Amino acid sequence: MSYTSSPLAAIIVVVTVSSLLSGCGESSTAAEPRLRNLVYCENPNVGTPSCTLSGYSLTDDSELGAKLQTCAAGGCHGDFAVTTWSLDLSGSVEEAFAPLTTVIGASGDDLIDSFDPDCSYMLTKVTDQPAGGSQMPLSPPYWSSAEVDCFRAYLHELHPAPAVAE
Image 1 (cartoon, helix red, strand yellow):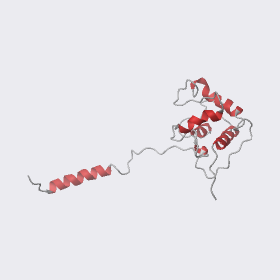
Image 2: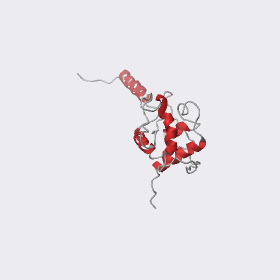
Image 3: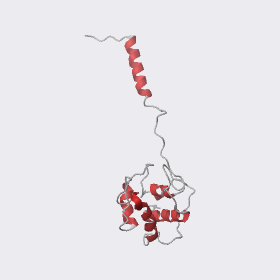
Image 4: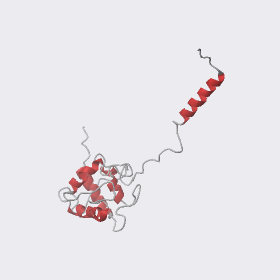
């Protein structure tokens, strides 16, 4: 049996291929872009982190640990967490944060971003402009701007920027 091309067959092929290719282009059903809190993350105007409070450093994380303990209490992010991750504060804050560098938050950012601490989802959530969802904690007292600055400074101390070769 030999194959003979017809104009109808050619039209059917062109229409089928065209409709398949049109599905690969831009679409109004495309996923929304990731929500980013640009207070710190990818903000070229933000200064170097600093902290004026005690208890927010790698050598003394007592105040930060106490502040984070409220996140672990009440079934939010503790032993019986209702979320997908928990915060184990039985040791240091540094030890509690170590496993969180591999956990992705609702915004698509790492909970603790070891490459760019300013883009850590946990930092985003305690600011007054959280990206994706509610500010944490859900009810007052919220973190003060000094506490947020110290948390940011702690994250930068924990994950310093790599040295630039000259």
